[in-house]
Length: 287
Ligand code: HPA
Image 1: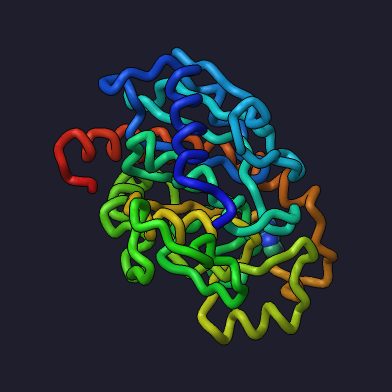
Image 2 (image 1 turned 180 degrees about the vertical axis):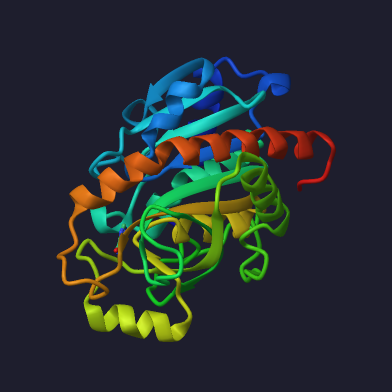
């Protein structure tokens, strides 16, 4: 196993110590901001931040428009951790490195993980710039962070994925979107390793398999959350039409620009969901 339990513990203790979190002020909700979606941190109150580089054993976020900072503060009335920038396997990381922070969150006592990402739109009924709540994923690459020796302190060797996208959090997200007047589609995300975008033939194949969107992140973390028992959900910003749908070549500039345009509605939605999720934890309605 590339990381020991003690290393995860050391990272967790470091984060709790630096943010001065006592058990009663420990966030129960964590948010991860994908490409171009970093703006949410401006809405945080009473916040402080740490560079990923300062946290023992944390990988570095090298991806474009990923700040690489962990915030702790208040959002929608809830105490939250916010990861501005995440880790991708295309950066050369192993899946267990990309999902390292999820086990650290488990040790910190986090119960709900609200993920975001930018994704290519395969289902043209949805459209560029819209938001899609992930109801499931298709992963044809060997990116499980749980390969290798299993540590039972985190979870079982074999584990269920049918509720990996938490039904309770998805219901909450749908309710919050409706209340905020934000259209939120629901669909299936296909994981592709990148860093190259897909070929048109790959997109046609993924559509036949039932995918509505495609991206290069999120899945390792959701697998680890299912393993260690954190409720997870993800909202994708459909930043571009997937390869071959139009003649236009795909570019990361378009991805980041469209995500930035959608960032305000994403932030409004996540602020509402964070508040409700934290309340559900208090009421014992979330794991
Ligand atoms: N493909 C893969 N990943 C992506 C895309 C895409 O079209 N857009 C944003 N992330």
